[in-house]
Length: 375
Image (cartoon, rainbow, N blue to C red; front, top):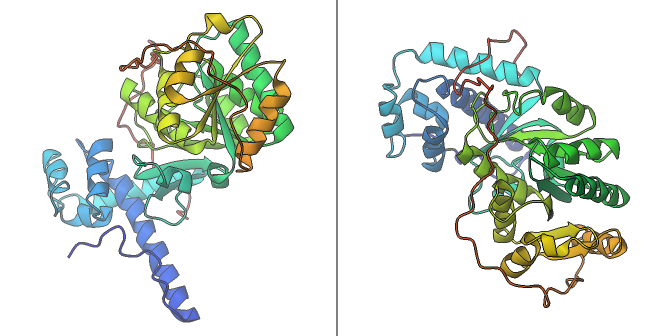
């Protein structure tokens, strides 16, 4: 019989020795699951969605590596031309090698069925089946504000992003963004400047250098006590679909979303939509005299009950609102939306292209095996 992913969750058995034994069994089980998962990424034809089907079938990855069984597992493995027998030892070695590479970089792979999986991600209806985390895992569970926006910001957008981060520095919280060029990177850089831990949610695998040239910023994020997060396979490349799905993780991790500059038909609009779906608070900010040129403000107020603040004139009100949400204190929306014009609902939200023409990222390549010990 297959060993399901939930089989070795803590049983609550009494007795110190029994608890120790169970804990050791759990560690061994999940260690083997991680290696098997990474080994399966080396099978030609098995990618993100194949592994996703295995996870949703509640079937252990190690068991899938040995002998494909239930519906939803057999098909993707058969499509890859893998019957669970030939090359098993070689595949296991590849899984260990990739695990060592990730360990040497401080990257953890955590499955949704594990107790350590971030509760904010587990709580959403379309929760990731696993998550790769580099840096401080606890950041994903702390009160946080996501600051996101366009890849091609205006001077106003840059000012608003930096201003918002200055406000957050007065409060003290984790920030979340997507490491994309433009608003996202400014949010991360400003977070580091103000000593705020910042979480970068990637739309590619965690071993990819994307956006191109972002490695230095990633290193600074980690040095400053931040985190790098991805649900994609370690060497998985970018795609429009991946960026849209990435946006739901940003929305899930935050308690408040502040899209400092965005448009109704954009990638950021997906993040706003996800935040509303997950019942997160959405805040728009704008400079004096610019409200009428920002159609996304009345649109999101009507469609997603977003609040809005003119800054710097309403800064103290913004701070009080953010504090009330982050401290989970009862509060009422401080900004009226009654006199804002209502825009028509946009059913199709198209992501902003994040593709760079000179990128040559391979989707399925694996790093060379590391000689560092596997923890």
